[in-house]
Image 1 (cartoon, helix red, strand yellow):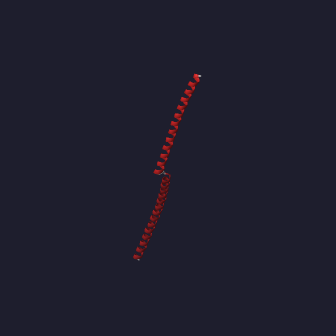
Image 2 (cartoon, helix red, strand yellow):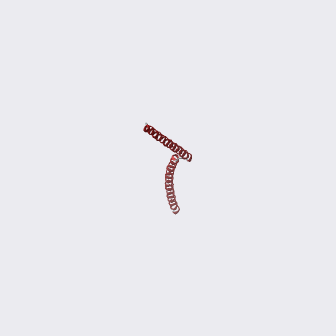
Image 3 (spheres, helix red, strand yellow):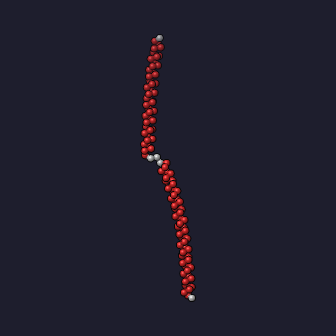
Length: 101
């Protein structure tokens, strides 16, 4: 009978070991799912950041457009200054002509 009693103890030990192994497997499975969830969230954030990020060609095009607009404004100011000076000269000539009358 000693052998049968020993066998029952082994069965209990094996059951306990398998239960512990099962508990560890469940805990690790939960941890892996949580890690996958977090990784998925971070990946989505990364993709969203990359979608918002302007690429080099877009920045270059925007810079060139801004430079062209600035050049256009500067040219407009030069023409305006030239026209204002021409008007001043004309007014001066008109004023001088009126004084002669």
